[in-house]
Image (cartoon, rainbow, N blue to C red; front, top):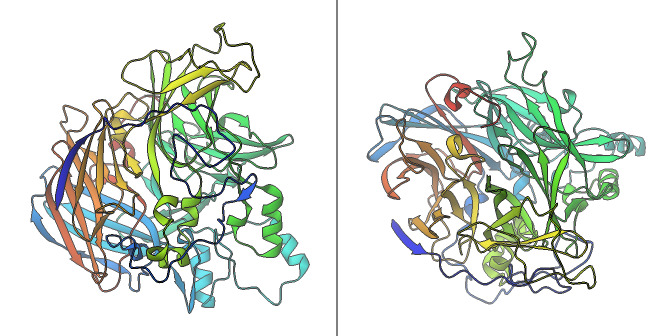
Length: 605
């Protein structure tokens, strides 16, 4: 294993403010995809050089493509090396792709793989492991039929010869796949598996047995929601969904109060209500959302120019095409960062930025009448194309694969007092801007903001770390929506020396720390605070581990000291079949409910 520390003073200068009509970008200079207005996310046919050696010899992308052949229902005990902290008792739950196979068929996209839940139980220095498929409707129907019978994100189902045109029209108005294979979040003392379809699955925290399904749209009028709700200190849960009105689609912030806060015997879902809404920027092309931001006084909705085309969605449902065919990328359009009040049903501020694609927001907070928001950004959504199964299998012969997957963590700073100020600008075309007046007035940032002659505020980010960072996590319990110093992530650079690197970034001192082991691929690093923690990184990092190449039946749990960034212990398991890599998860302390672990108090911070 290897650890390293590096200063981040090699940040590039970001000077260009507005997107140009070509592929060049001072923020994202690496994108190989053509600059195509109104194009699908599906890239043009990718270059494959069959005569070359492996282009990314250190990367075994097949760790994502494994299929679990045997569930581990009864926990198996691992071999511990190093030290398991005495205070660390609880369970790490993971969710992610479990099988790309159905009978003799394969799914075409990683996001279509059947959901597999994992559980690492830590009790008194011992660690056990188990895994189990989430019993979704689509999982049961596919396995009963022995083929893919429901269309997914990137995979069309096998056509049913008995289905009439009237059946197809009817299917447009019915829900699609309920494959909840993205994340895990608590609602009170219950755990749920999430995807972006508003159907979430409750599972048993001890056995991983699927115990029920909640159709959130039956409780509150939404057609989808993000896979990453926010759980507040009081136990309130907020999420962002898309609701429909007579004027078109709206981005709606939903609140799920703790059970018992309202009428007795009502669940969190029964009490759900919409806190605030804004119209989608384009009624027939609402932007795709995977997450959102929250601070003490604001909700933050980032509208990227990757959109769900409503006409294309209807066409896809009628023609049995994959959902991805309805996603459209508009690179000539800017990204809009909307700031909504948590106290009034109003949009307070709106900011504009160069077009970028993102899945995950790292954190956000208010500081001296500014909002700071850190996002894992990509030049465009080509990375979604990288996760097609055929593309992943051929990636070693694809010169552009690493560039397509290239992302970086960026910091945007939003000045809140500039919307009302009479700032002088050059009397020129409304697309020009005043390069002389940076509106940001806080220390320790190279981010910029300018007021354009049309009154819009255009923001230019700074680079936080010159490494690809994904599935970012922070000290969530104490620093969500607050000024913070550290985040933790896994590498998304397939062409680096070790693509299985775990990264810690000090955003204040501009220092990055890395941990890696040859042929080892850890998943999302989850921070668990020391019970008597004295500072932000006083705790440990938990990460599920798998190994590449021939070590398919091998899984582990890694424990790092979050402060020193040194390994302190691990537990490894031999499994009866292949174990695939997972996406997101949640750690539950063994003491009391999930709500007790999070704490009590305000629905704010």
